[in-house]
Image 1 (tube, rainbow, N blue to C red):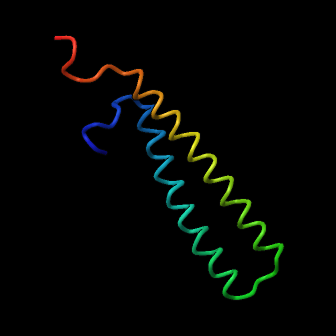
Image 2: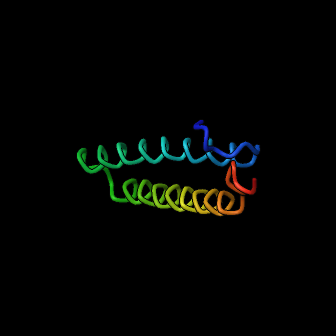
Length: 80
């Protein structure tokens, strides 16, 4: 984690979940590309697209929560 990452466990947990979702999204994108390339059934492609949409939405929600949390925290070195 970077020095600017929040020190609270919830912030670290969110950051870790975001990183894991990024990996999952990357895997889904590769799997989806392979499905199109291999001509897999439309139902399988639709399931992958749905999973990708869900993972992206979850990641977006976590990013928004993290940004909200960061906006509430005072910056280091202020108020002196």
